Image 1 (tube, rainbow, N blue to C red):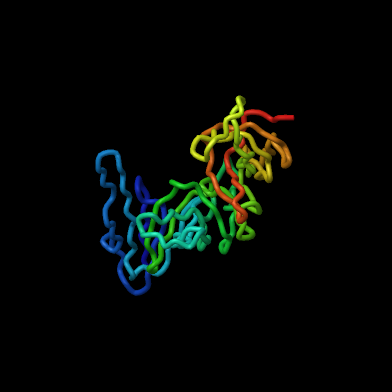
Image 2 (tube, rainbow, N blue to C red):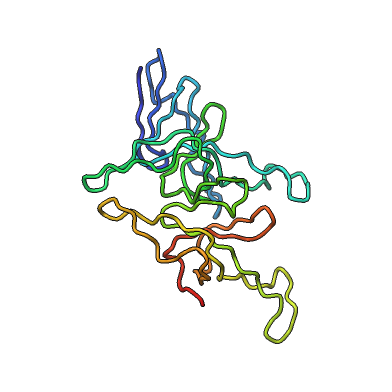
Length: 246
């Protein structure tokens, strides 16, 4: 059995293996690295040749098989491929061996088979076994979905799940605001919190915010989601929570 290990910018650290064939870097084909057109940056997926039958992430990385993009709007309108929203979730199909902090070995805390949500622009896209995947660091995983509703998300590390407060419908003078003119709220109620970040000794540090607290958070931080009933939620790092309201 031969193997190829790749590390470097643009290609996440992984190990490819195959049986009965000599490994060669040409087996890994990159459609294109980055093409910039004015201010638009396009990143193509790295295509893994069919002769490679296994892809093992290294370190604290995970391989996530992407969920398909939505083909219809909530109202049932078919979307062209260019208008389909990029998925932010998928299933963990492989995990690395973990990382070392000091003299302590820290295993990846997410198991294979878990349904996860990740940061929107994180990771390296890979086409493997005719399916789209992402190679991500564990810290790029926002949370674990235990149901189909984001309100039941289990945040990871130092992240916090917040139910966003409703935007004001009127100005202080009584003028009714349209959806486009409503100010984006930055206040909400904490629904769930992660176990906290790892310190230099590899131990979890509990977060200073708790579920049920009403908080003020940084206006442009985090990743926004909508629950099954249309309720807006946001997941952000605890450091983006600026104050607790009471």
